[in-house]
Length: 180
Image (cartoon, rainbow, N blue to C red; front, side, top):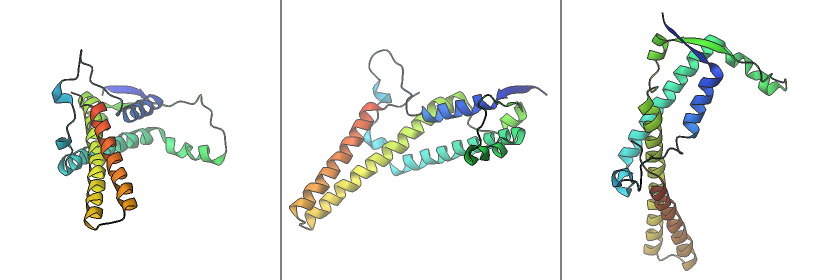
């Protein structure tokens, strides 16, 4: 059976880089970003946010499966309590392991497009949806206070919150783009 040698530190490092940099991916096109890659307010609906959330749930499940495979082969979790007990951990200790293709076949979301496109686009969808919903909530709170004929101070404060929330959303869609 063909095996793939994988260093635990490399796997963990790569997964952390992928997750940490999901927000950093940019489309590399010569010249301006084409319109189809630009974000638009109407793309951030409850349904699109919920769909992106279901994808993120699958990504985390896949990461947990991969972690379980690594744990089974290395028992690295048994060594983690040393970190919290005050004992020093030698930084020159590394683990090597082999993961069979059959084991990897049971882990989803390892494909290039999922990790380089899906992670980024679903993150953008979730963040954009949350920022837009916050802006809409603040705008509705302001409108409600106007209808209730609330104090000028309350109106000013809520209007500023609504304006700030809308500005954050607008900056987000201006500075982010879809990757494909």
